[in-house]
Length: 396
Image 1 (cartoon, one colour):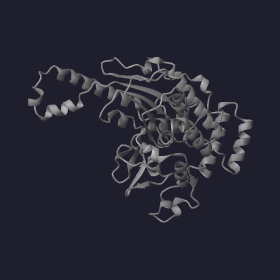
Image 2 (cartoon, helix red, strand yellow):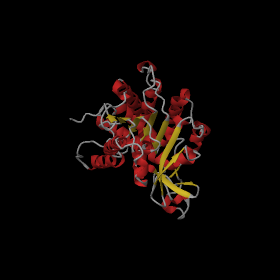
Image 3 (cartoon, helix red, strand yellow):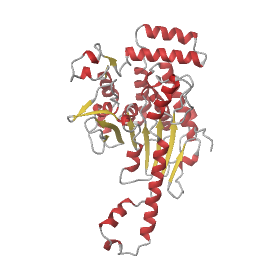
Image 4 (tube, rainbow, N blue to C red):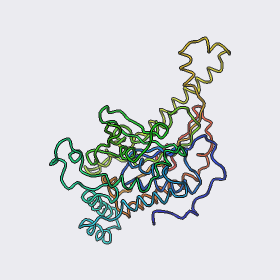
């Protein structure tokens, strides 16, 4: 596969980083998800194997492929999935796409045109092993039926997951696994976690049940939609879970919050989509840094209280004691930054060539990030939290 790079580019770590936990957090983003596969390949080659993997939507699928396979088979499972779902659909859109690819792919306009045709092929033909269009449009189906809830059938994804993912391994506790969804009835974000739930294919599918394309997924009598409707990353779930641990987190985002002001309606649609799904990761990490600074300050003050006084202070002090901590966190951002020719259809453009481009981009970005040894070092700042984004070109 051209999307994978030679392992000789990666350098194995001589020792495990000095953190109690290594977490891999994967954002939602449809066809952009092969970027995450490239990132994981580079991490695996460096011998950086996560203790906890958490995802939303396509990030949940990639997380299941990682957690549901032994370390030596994970990249192979990711490759099998992404090659299957980007197999060319049969029909005229595929033929037109191939012709355009040979004729006009050399400039951004031509490349964008090819991508739009390929995205149209995915809309009309689906993605093999992932989703397929319903023969009857939902507005012509009987209300209350699953056919009336969505444009696509996702039963192919269930079969693919059950073929490529060992759910017994996920539930064994070897690696913690979590995926985020939204309860349709309550509107609340729900995280299915292998420490509290017996994970199966439905939990992964629930995390990616984005309406009206895909139907809600039923689990224990409740219906769930894509977790990205509330939060497109489970980062907060990972950081706030107790007991807290020193954590090295790789946060892999598929949408960039930063971008240029749109110049027309097409770029406007793309810009609002980037903002909507970017999850405002920087705002979340800034808020977390403030919380950790308060927790560490609280711990420092509590150490100044004479022994025995805490016990006589009442339940309020016990509540504060539970919040006080001095754990440290490194949060490493890897964010896919779309090419100039990628439009608002980039998350459903399931062509093989584009998938390989995304995979290669993730692999290269991860290699560049791993060249910075400071991400492996425990932070010494007052809040005990350091954030890194080596691809960020923002001034200051």
